[in-house]
Length: 401
Image (tube, rainbow, N blue to C red):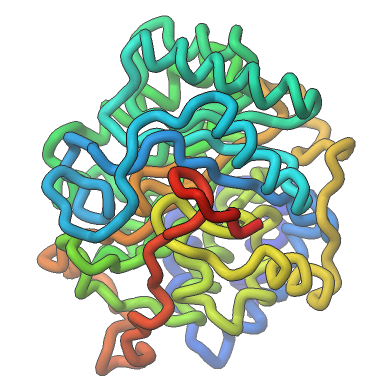
């Protein structure tokens, strides 16, 4: 296929595809999906080999958020049955992080729900970073605390944070359909603040919210322009009790095409499969490792992931290897930047570090492009795969790591 050959050549040269080429990837048929994966896999292997970076989420503060993001299980006034608790003590957060690190994670993502941190919150997180690094000197720490005010990124950097996550989530044209309490421009500003402070910027998207192909391509091209080190790709987890609970319009093949498009547009960037991979990729998860070079280990912010042991077995069975703590994630030409890596959970699992749990876009905004939806190729709704987290941080039960 001429399109794929062109995109591979561009990816190996770090050249940005045209908007039309990116849209064409999403428009490929199910018959061609393995060819698309193979082509994007060549780009992934060129820049990242067969390494898979493991990241681990610690939800420092769950629920209690004043924002109205439609995809988020922690949104204002939500009745989703998630865990709700205020700030974890530094020693409890460090203990939670240790479980993920013992499972092979090299980065810990510290996430707190809310519009953004107060200066007191920044100091609180600084204490948590110190507690974690006292026990694990070489661990990478990414913070995800919401919108940053002037000077806060610099204080986090001074406290030992390596990266900062803040996702764009969807295109600028449709951002107002999912959130009214802050703007797309607010999010862009926070990513730029993190960059300017010397932090490794992490920013990604949520797919499956009823958006068009054009929306997906536009947000990924906008991310390319912002130049984060890491791009987490979240697939909406439609949590009951959120406005987007009925948005089940992804198939495993659609998810693979989205990941391939992101890899072609961001060839030398850490692409992370974040929230929703178990729900929407399901048995196709191993194929996605040919596109993304990073995943979360274990549970997400407010929902459960598959067992950490199953993650490790999947990586090995697919012929990949876990990236070691002494290995540099990014290619040499990028590794000199701000923390040498990136975070990426999503914000919907309850506002997350590149991770999104539950949440999607307003169903009224589905116009524009062809969608995978129930009745046009999508599988049956799998609510059995969505389970609220009841273990780990904020509970007395052992974490899934």
